[in-house]
Image (cartoon, rainbow, N blue to C red):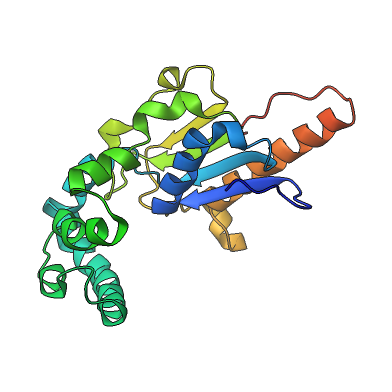
Length: 220
């Protein structure tokens, strides 16, 4: 931050799940910096718009029974490895005893990254109310049957205002699924749509740089 980009070509960002949150948060908070860094567009999928509500979905009912153990099987070994390097940062026993995402965030995430509480962490990571701040072409693919997200928190196109945001909500797709006929070619709707959108944005930028008229990027 604060440095000048050297030899940077066009930058297109892609994020999935929590990575989608990181990309979206960056676009919202650094909108004034994007042109300097030549960020031209972004495409994300399975974005948790409201982490607090998504935590409740993940820690209760069907999702907790099916997915939570798998998450902890990956997260807790990372906490053990971190604790071995710096045991002063958090109480390992409390982390390993966590039974919900909120408990894990309280005893590990907040301690390591300096958040006062899980509520503060979730609020700072929430992108739901700031979609209007996005200034580059942005494509979002989410599913209404995603078992890890609070689908009631999905914003509407109207709530995004005049921002170049293209929302693609599907009835089915789960979390990073979106299986369709393209799987026979080793792909799926998610991958095809992201590639198509970013290729369209790049073609639009190229045409504009050459002085040619070009349509506004769309996800189709």
